[in-house]
Image (cartoon, rainbow over the protein chains, first blue to last red):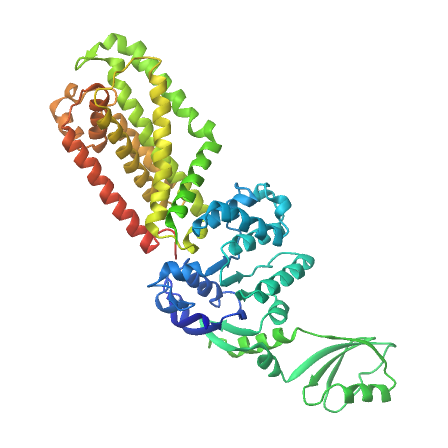
Length: 307
Length: 254
């Protein structure tokens, strides 16, 4: 079943700016889906329309078969939103925020108490349940928004840059949490500027640019389209000249490190063999750029508007 | 879905909000009206004498109570709903599967409850200055509730259009307060020159204050049926307009 179906979705703001240009998108049930794009591409507008924060100018949005326009309450009942900006009442306590949200979804108080405890424990916020929310750290506020979005057990969870501004340790723990939520059956749509996050978590991806979907496929086949991988090699001893190996583009970054462009059909074995013949010993190797980042830049570059 | 739970959640949240800051919401009207009763009712009123068979203190009590109800039912909704917009937690409501009529009913009920609580506080204070035997309790209660409803709705509309905190102060300062003072709180319109009597009849607050005065002490300058028709008419118009604004997303959606 399709969790989210978007057909010919268009948004023209009152100043005439066309943020979405008749986009089509489908997200299957159980998917972990990335919606990527540069700033101003139309991601937030798309999320805003799906979650009823922005009025669409045209097109159809269906959530688990419920039309967002004609069957609004049922469609909305399926969604949980973790927005980009902190948007809870900063004067309420952590538990009140989650309890109020449960009330908005028609959950009885007794049941809401059980659910809010479960969500807050899952987000490691139970010990902070009576803390006024403005006193929480940035990472805790983000986790509180996830707990709030989860309290009515949504079938579709929309995460709009959920890890923006949080440190790497919290980000990694949030990744584990999102994976677990998805494993338990919740469909997730993720927007993020951290492309390694999308690559690590998501199975399918859409890239939006200038209000159009420029790519919509599964992550594996998208990454398979990457023809050249870039690596940085750390060497055991300094080299005085850049080694020349046919089929590879090699640049010297410093005396002990090289940057190598490796075409996919060439592979790495030949490279290492040739380096070894030239008495160059490699002690470690890392990707120069995130693979998805490279593709993303290529796709966005191809879709620049004419000057 | 059970919308009554969503409605109750909004109302409880609203009541908890103004009860949490009771020194700012319930105490000031008690202070202000005590001063009105002392200065206008006691010190000046003793020299004015009797109006329509009631002492001046008895005469001003209904208007002072209703003026507090008007300003606080309005203030509660305008400040609460605007803060909800300003802090962006309006998004919690917009994302949730709550019909707009439930959102409106929840906020307006919060305003009504605050208006009524302030009204009760002011009524209790008035007992320290005069002993009023309620003439028509049913009419008094009905006007009390209808007036709070009307101004809670007006506060909601103000909040929808407000873009800054200045915008939520303009209407109470430059519209509500003058209309309340000119609505016959401290005088009978019969005491005005004829031209001002006619102009005063264009002030809807005049009808509410007089209907409430009729409910409390049995004295009025206007026809009670007309007063009820005007108040109910305004409520219906403002309720439909509020729903229209919510359905269109005016001031809350882009």
